[in-house]
Image (cartoon, rainbow, N blue to C red; front, top):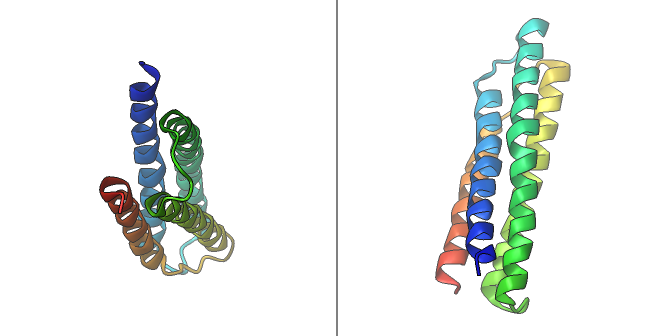
Length: 138
């Protein structure tokens, strides 16, 4: 059955693009200084928009679709603790992505840089916890 290995590869590649895109955007906004000019803010906005639409969105869609296929192919029991933990952590990653987008929009509009390193640290922690939940299947 060739579908499962292909779905696994697509799932992992999607994760790399999704998490990598979020990390890149958070590092980009954390490097910005408060009070930057409108021109610089516009350039940062265009860069982060490119990352968002060319990396994050396709990565998240591929990850979720391939993950759904893998769940179906493996006939995962939804009542397993590791699976519930993994789904909760994935929802946490989606929330972090939403908060990062809001912070970037606020910076573009007002020019005040927020604290993106807290979101970046949360991204790293959620990613590592998800990895532990999948590998150990506690």
